[in-house]
Length: 520
Image (cartoon, rainbow, N blue to C red; front, side):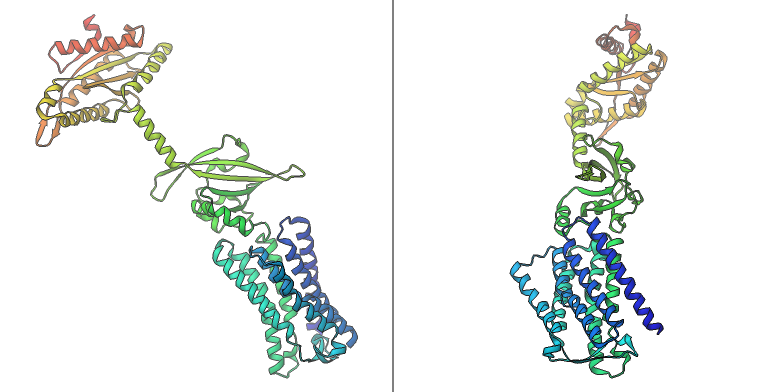
């Protein structure tokens, strides 16, 4: 009696879950994939209702009517499952094939409903009121196994489609595997029942475990819909399209909960592979803080951020954020984040900037860029009433190096002195190759004595570090002129003063530092 009550309770609960699942899918799912799914659930519902009525019947006639209702579900369940799996996995079944596939279920249902007259399904049937758990006891007719035969073929075809899709879409492993279990569980249970029915004669093994597999199937379907968002995932065709996009695609809801992504996004953020839908996307390792609250950013401007690659080098990305609204209510549903790798573009821009702003030989600023920065610094110093100084540096006897050792040796000397200058000046001082063998240095926030000491340090450091070229040590010296903005009303005047001081250093014997005030 206890077993009977447990079975009835399980059936009632499963029927309630089935009804709830149908209501949830009908009201909350907008996917075109839901239609065949609802038909599958409906056939399971008919099967469970029929089996419940069979177990609670009090006569052979009542139990037989219940069995006919049960077969209304079980006859069409295999074909509906096949239609759903094919539709869900984007395997097109031609209409003529679909109509042909419907013929066996219709024939099977006809055999069941006419079995009292034809005896093709049931040769005879009886009802054991003392053990209702066994249900209606029957003697098989000549076509009793017809329904199981085509069910095996349909279910096997559905399982094959699922396996093929699973190999192509491993990211949907859990939901597809649950569908696979749902497909195969009733088939195995029914096969075991038939095997035991033929092999054994004990009453216990004559209990049909197929209804229990149906209960398990409906529970698994419930988990698949509610836990793994069976119909919230991108349909297979769209998923394949998204995976072909080079840019990373991430879908989040209004609460920044993860809803989906493409293959490029999962390569960029590997933890997305195992991130459950509905989990906070911020939990993903290396998720940029710039994208923690996408509502703050304009759709037109987008967002830029930097991530390290496997080698620790910086990679640059641009994220375009688009809002998703419900069409009718204009309610915000979430955001699409499209992330583009712009590393190559940024690096190319930096290279172009480097070409435009720096001297190709020495790697320091070229004359044009120096003039732009130095004039801005000169004007800023005038407005802030702070001192700035300009140094003009000219290599001594540089022509002799070119004439004696060649221009390659001259280039080596120019590179050497540029390194020496940068080793002495501060990081924020401006250093440039002014032209030929001339260099310029502009410093700010320093008095005249500090500027002269810095110029002397540069001269001394260059003198102590000759350039090694092949087997030769080439001595290097500078003549340096220093001018202050206090004596100049414009940047052009400051340049002329520094140049005059440098020529005075040349006249006085070279390899020395001369301030402009000494030549006024």
